[in-house]
Length: 146
Ligand SMILES: C=C(O[C@@H]1C=C(C(=O)O)C=C[C@H]1O)C(=O)O
Image (cartoon, rainbow, N blue to C red; front, side, top):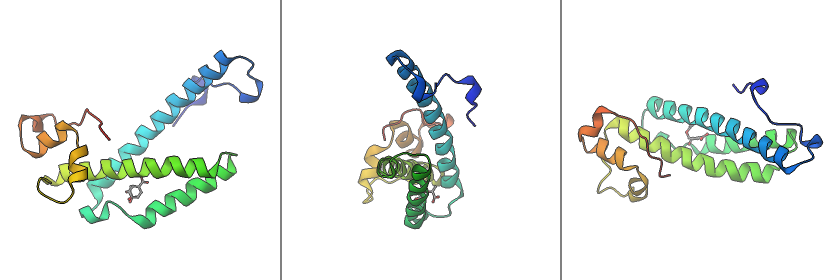
């Protein structure tokens, strides 16, 4: 969890200079990206737990997340429309990441299947892992292309 005491974001209503604005935005961005990274670890967990590829995209849950995000935005005086737009994009990227991880864990090779779009967006390292090259040893994806 983010510990506010270690951060430099100021009270927006009392800042008077652009330097203070930017220090605060930089700090908040560090916290937001850290939390998004934590969220992505759970997407990877989902890829490990779900029994089949067809379960990766669960439209009911996508709608559920967007509804809850809209409710939270309303509560914290943030635009519901912006929050849902950002999250729709985040969820699509998350689903792609989940698919890549699901396939890696399943040892699937998607070449020749109709899922060309996903295949095209895979990091070279994931493709190498799927092809069973020496890269398998490291097993980690260090390049994000989606
Ligand atoms: C993590 C899940 O997988 C996908 C990713 C979601 C997300 O980023 O919140 C939501 C629905 C799923 O299609 C899930 O089913 O909960």
